[in-house]
Length: 461
Ligand code: SF4
Ligand code: SF4
Image (tube, rainbow, N blue to C red; front, side, top):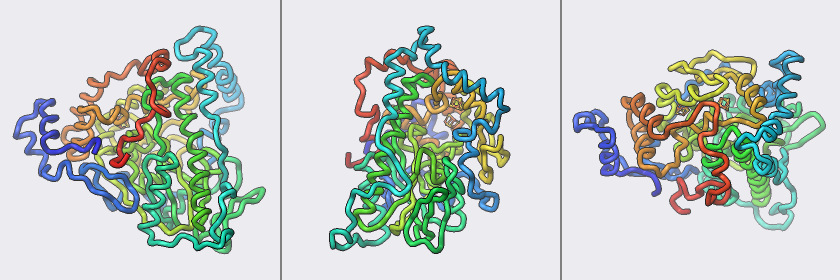
């Protein structure tokens, strides 16, 4: 297994911190260390410090949660949060920033960098109902697939991995989790959960999800660490553009697969539509909510994008996890310290207090100032991602110290402050408003396919 620590390795790594036997004893029993478990309903094999739990590590007040209008996010509703003049000004800057920087000779904004960024978003299309070019079993007079929910989860995990997803989890919809489906999609269409509808439908004004479709499939797609380390530049932004483009194909393939076995899946009509992906991801145990107010995974840190789809195929839900990530964020403020726009919270403890209309609330977390983040993007002409790049969980997993940090934070909280400091020292993030690695150097890397290690976190790669 690529990154589970056995007891001997764990103790050896602790030696790097100069810890004595007495300190090690404080950690409590670690005899189980290195044992891994396999969660049949569809999570990867994970080391022992990633524990499944009944409730996510973030506190949720379901009574305060309601179905959000996606157009209130800053991604879609940027103009709502600025007066007309200020919005025009940031838009004007946004339109020219990338080319101004090119003409000024700024590193990372060369013509080839911009071309890479623009080309990375090209790819398949996506839709709510999905493609219809895979025949249903009925059309071929063959039986539809039948099996237990556990078998179905395992099957979907395997199919999604083959289609390009990294980790896969499942959430059953109930009166609470249903609230994580948007009330209104980014294009203004109402998302209706209908008792009467037997199949999903799309009209001029509505997208209709049958109430009988009770299962959410949620998955991650890896982003390139080497790419994101070049944020904020077009080379860095190419990484996220590429991940969204890849997922358009992954979602369509999953919809085609479900159709081919006799079921259906309704997906994102466009990027970020349908529902709140990190929320479903956290409930399904793909990761924990972090100071970024985004999900961090044990396998890839924040270097993923999370996605979701709703299906009528009965699935066995997966469980939330505690890998010490949310707790570690209380001591580590690296992302907030390095954020050039001051968008991330520096409060040690999470809170229910929101930052603006773009936050729905109801979750005890570190709410972000999405408006100052978005305005900063207009300054640099691309998206940013410095916060992802400097997070200690983003470092390539096989680094010895990184394995140690992850192993320790998942086991005990007593070293969190020291480990946060150690992470900053060892990984030495660069200046707060600059790429963490040289964008020019990116063009000389022996890059892997898509810039990711697809064997990371998987036993049978
Ligand atoms: S993307 Fe950049 S500006 Fe936005 S929160 Fe992260 S570091 Fe801050
Ligand atoms: S940089 Fe530190 S505080 Fe921020 S998300 Fe990562 S672990 Fe949490």
